Image (cartoon, rainbow, N blue to C red):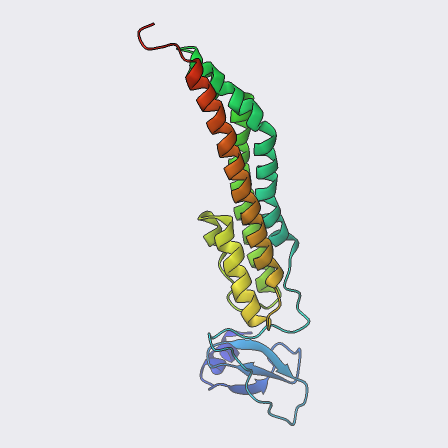
Length: 217
């Protein structure tokens, strides 16, 4: 749209006007910007587009609400869980070095399993942020009005996925609940795996304490 027509549009009140993009006969102007609703009937003035109670435009019924990126965001924590459980035995055995003064810290911190888990946790975090951004952008392209912002993923992946599910369900007429239930399931698995890992490590620490020489020996 050129400068003159853009200035003219800003002087108009909300209503249906000839589509400046040439995609339909009429397009809705909300007083500040052109909206998605259009009309193909030149002689009719449809009702203004309906907005939900929280001020977001409803999503078109045919618009998909799931993306590959959101499923990757949910899959990444499970990859971390599997990797942690696969290396927990090696990490717990590293605690046996506590019975040998002077070597304990080095044995644990130089453990390949400890290093791999640390690097993997940062990789999972970074990819979760990237995939959340890609999912956010995909939702915008599909017409979701002001999706839940991807930057919330910096706090934790469930903050983004659950917030995203709430917004999408509202604008899509209840569609998109799969992300919410998947988030709850992944959280439950992660908590259960964390408890199991804590019990295994606690057992290894207790065994190591019993092997320590008495004080003053």
